[in-house]
Length: 172
Image 1 (cartoon, rainbow, N blue to C red):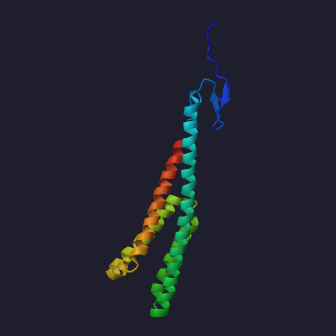
Image 2 (image 1 turned 135 degrees about the horizontal axis):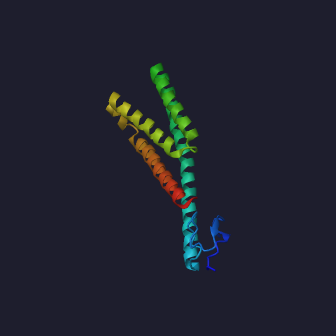
Image 3 (image 1 turned 60 degrees about the vertical axis):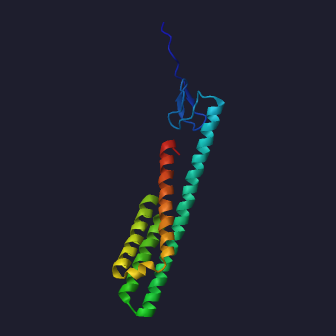
């Protein structure tokens, strides 16, 4: 008779997915089943690093959420100042709407980080553009705060995108 290779099912020692007995690597997590101990250790080290990066990304999302809540609170404070100093109802409502939008985006941020970071950036940059169009001097007041806010949002966006790439590539 013919000599056939047995394909009895085994489990990957790393992720526990069923693999063929003759499998060289796990198709799910890419663990080197037939690799040397050194290759297996290197794989586990890389996975640990990747898991750490993903966890770090989740911390960045939490910090970004807090930053958006703070920015929203400043907009509420700005609305209060505008109303108390200028009695401008339309400007007060404008600041309160921006605060509400940013607060909602902060609340929804953990569900879809990329979408709500981009949306927050869009609202904030749109607000700065409007300030510039109304009175260019207004953009320069608090310029450091504006750069820090935008920089932190861009950093958060970069971190989340990289984390999503790692999750997708390594099935985390």
